[in-house]
Image (cartoon, rainbow, N blue to C red; front, side, top):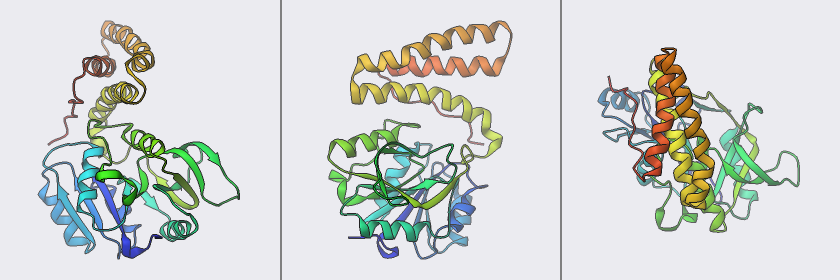
Length: 288
């Protein structure tokens, strides 16, 4: 079955995304249902979105659950065969959805489709397998999670994102599972998006977000490698970062650079907690 407006829903996970979400929603056809999962209890945000857009339903998670868990909640609310996962700082080109629909008609099967990021310096895929014709869909091993269209029937028992990840690599983990189950992942180069990276959360929280990113990147990297390749691989990949972070923490402690000190302390803490098998518990302080 090919994709159409009648069997596609969009899921967008947000947190303090008021400044970017409207541009994202406005780039999506108004006849396509959109589920916004706001990782807070922000009733005003929900009211504003649902009042402004007839095709938007906003779900309040009640707390900051992370991208993977938020996406899973949104997917559960969809009633269509296909779901398009988007970050709130994504803008679709006018013909993006039509190009995805057309590509789905020409592919025998797929588990994930993705448009292509217009900024060629930051490709949203890894490990191209082949491309028979220019500007035709080509198969890849991984796509970034900020824009991925899922064929729900290809996911056994409705298992999508691993909710142990709070931030980072949940999309790569999903792609690995798709590949191991014999599924296929395609980039559609004629379908284009603009990704305004690191703008999903209001910039006034940039320091807290940066601290969170440094903690979760190393935690997720360790957990990802341990889960998919074993504990030895996880240690080899992450131990150098931990050692470097300790030395850098001490350096910035000596020169009294408080913010840099916190960054490298968070990196070390993320590794330490992952090594001990603790959950990805760290959360940025952006609840005001």
